[in-house]
Length: 559
Image (cartoon, rainbow, N blue to C red; front, top):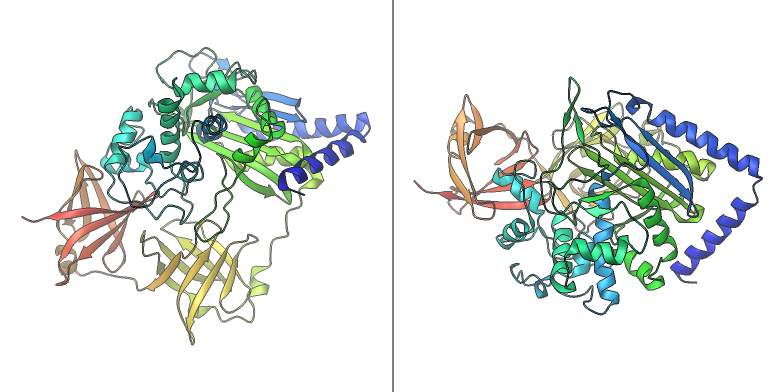
């Protein structure tokens, strides 16, 4: 039986089981779930708070539509189930669908090289396919992260698709070979929208309206192709501050990576089409749910703008969204015929966690979370001291510190306060909590020299042990200089101020740099800066890694 056949069989069985419940029992389950949803959003349900709308369907029938808080705090307008919000990265599945429809039309193939349609991109020697873009395995740097490095991030400038192509055309390197790993990058989905523009004979927004939104009756859905356009019924997005709320709406024209304007009701209609194929059928469903495959043959969770996974043993297909002050969650639980849509205009709503809580309210006992391990008890008998210390990933320079606390080995990434407990299964293999992710350690006798991270998103991701570094004034002074990047079209001036390495960027941005290990520093925004030396030991370049940009080089300018 194929995976798709099993999907439909399970769906039919779930529907049969549900139909055997007496009507009063169904009503009570729905009432209890609705009460729990009200409790989840109680903190956002006042007249002085931004809020959310929630829509839940079962087998295509609406079982809950509610709204909380205010759509417009300035004019005293409340949210309601028909309020239009921006869906952030929930948008990506619609972009994937547009490309899949063109593939079904025979206009293109998901195996096509992106340079066939966007020849402005550099030739990196290995083709980047449309499916690489759909599954975030292309290796392309995230254009928004590059823009932020340049000093003109997505919140400071109104970028459009010409800016996206311009930025990507200047990147002299990829983060990794296409297909080597999964790394979330908005660049892929902006390029896919551009492909639809170039090959369909109509704009991406018009194509989506004609081929997706109108056929499904999604009458309140459109792309935010022009952020200045008046959209009746649209909420204002807000960011929570220490004293209240401030407006935080997107100021960009780019879309496809985000930018879907929609309602929870329309998202319920879309999710039903992802269950039954809508007007497009099984082949559409198959292509939308085809997960990415890495070069080593391993399969990742990401498909066509969809994350295929589970919630407490319940199969799930989900995606979250976050852009400016908007937050979103869209989830589908096929075996129960359940769909959950959440759209918010409040920045302090946790997307995945809140969406999962809504789903759990309706899934009830079907969700069975594994019990949390007793880390201290299960670590007894292991000598954990040799594992403690500092490690770094050589491509990005990202640090990991392993610490022993209360008899448990814990991992801290970057300089963040959060730590992750590790559960020893052997002298070399430690599980990350109850997940299927592992630290696999290298040992030379009693000495631990490094580890490989097995996380289902990459292969050969190795971390080497490094020693902490406390540079002398003379060591800091030799790093001073001017460093330029053509990729980001910006200049850094490295100096030493009051014994601390500082990096200046125009017009007046100065960041302090905290030493990590030899020639490596971390900045306040999380950037990893490493200095590269020539054979004589002279610093000749600066390497910057920031989230979705790996190892961007800045050349030192002599004199």
